[in-house]
Image (tube, rainbow, N blue to C red):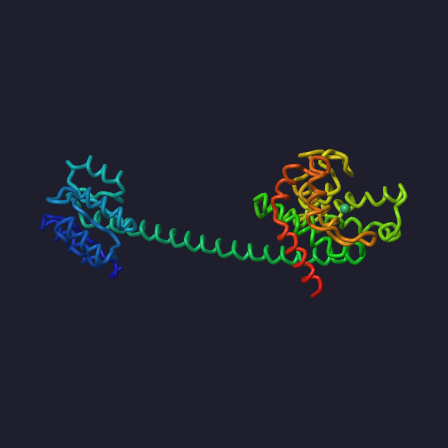
Length: 354
Ligand SMILES: [Fe+2]
């Protein structure tokens, strides 16, 4: 308690000395000052005070003005107003303006010490509460950051797993070598040109990468058959969209991507499969993917024909605008420079040969 400093502000010498002597006897370190300005100067140089006891009616700066300044500059220090009975309405105004309490003159020793103790206890609780809150906030922030990092790590390892899955499919279905990676890159390029949010693009990229994952469940005899498929075989082959959807929809972070996989063979005019969806019914990611997929098929070597040029691929996409493809997305696709497609192809080839 000896360290508890109390600032006593009163322009009346007798009252000031009386208060200070009671506080000193009780073991407090009391600092008397004679005006509000002096009190502020002292607080400004060192605000280690547990309580301020201030007269209400003083020459110069009065108690209310001093209170306002202390509330503003040193909000942690409780202020007790010392006042005569006839000032009670001003004392109440002081409480409304943030004074901790008021002490009526004349007062005895016990009353003074009781109010000082209460004010100190109040301040201690407030500071404890504040410290607890600050600690809690930093604890929550730290935990949130840990969680965010763990989730990012998890997502990264998911993506690595996905890549392995896509590679496995590329190996099984030799015709599509590098196809998954290229359509993913092309889908991302179109989605970026459309200025879609990053989160959406990520979902679309996963959907594009895994679009044919259902082919894992198609018998090799059909998947790798060199000639034309019979109508029955074609029917089985077409199930890959739904099979892929069924594989992915149970994986929570791939649920949205699963919708793209389900719809990746749909056409804008409703002539696609498996559900014959039309226009906006087809998820945006699947509409973007459809363009990326066809563009890659045209500009890649196939066992039965050589790759066509990028301008030929662009013309082919334009030709099917409004039928197979969403015309608005076709416009965005056509606005992307030829060089970008060339660079993406080269980049993926380099990556795959590593
Ligand atoms: Fe497909």
